[in-house]
Image (tube, one colour):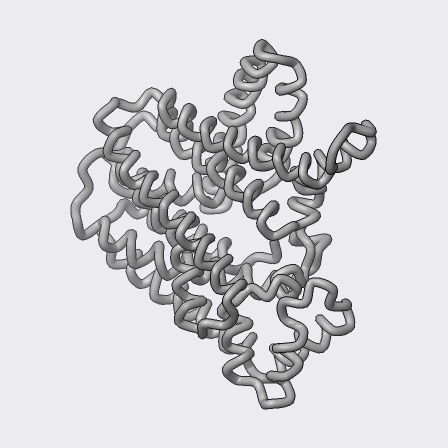
Amino acid sequence: MSQHLVAGVAGRVTGVLAEFLAAEVDTLRALDPAVADAAAPLTDLVLRGGKRLRPAFAYWGWRGVVADGADDEPVVRAVGALELLHAFALAHDDVMDASAVRRGRPTLHREFADRHRTGGWRGDPDRFGTSVAVLLGDLCAVWADRLIGTSGLPAPVLLAARRVYDAMRIEAVAGQYLDVLHAAGGSDGVAAAVKVARFKSASYTVQRPLRFGAALAGPVPPDAVAAYDRFGVAVGEAFQLRDDILGVYGETAVTGKPVGDDLRQGKPTVLAELARSRATPRQRALLDRTLGAADASDAELAEVTAVITACGARAEVEGMISARVSAGLAALAAAPVADPARRELSALALAAVQRAT
């Protein structure tokens, strides 16, 4: 039953997004056909892939605390906005990371740089691509607000949920800034890397979506909120730790984005920081020489990957993932939430960390 219901929420969210985006693109076309044409790769990014984890966590967070028989159609629309917020973050993140591929296709900034080159337009193609990708990311943020506002939920409920939504966005920006700052300033240790994971991913992927969904139900008992927070932080951090492992050990054909980018960018992930702390002097010299080298060869990255494994950093991160999932599931087991939601949230937690993409 769990797989069916989780997939059902994802399918309903995708349906809402498809209908909403079609109407929004028509609005853009009325402004100028060129603007609607520019939005096509963005709508494709939203609709062609993604696990819909954030809307699913939000939906089941709502379902866990709402009265039986409540109409969920407005809620599906509201939580669908989290997928648009995610697309906004992806567009900007890809620009900051200079990523070439997202979900198996060229990133937005690469797509529009290629359009510029093919068209023989004036100016710098890469600058044009970056500019358009930033604008499209901003457009997605506006669309997210519009979808929440037109969900059909009562204004007082939306106001309360908006406080959670705004906190989520602020924390995501804070985490992204700390990620950029630590990459530029050098290693700040494992504790700093965990903090980035908490703000950049735990809050934005699990904890705040849960709280957002709960807020859509109206006033929620404090003990339910506290349990959601414990579950959300633990599972959200585990999600990011899995992402770090996939960024080094995954397969591009499966993940849909280049493997090894985190190493070439010198991102101070928990995995990388643990490797630095556990490495021998010779291994540490290799890490210092290669991590953050944009021109590092595949062979050099393979050496780094071998060091990360040999020093025990990967195994330790796997242990951290297991410990966090166990803690999250324990918090959820004791939470005063409806049993169907408890089962679905447990399934989502496992899906979030037992993944190859």
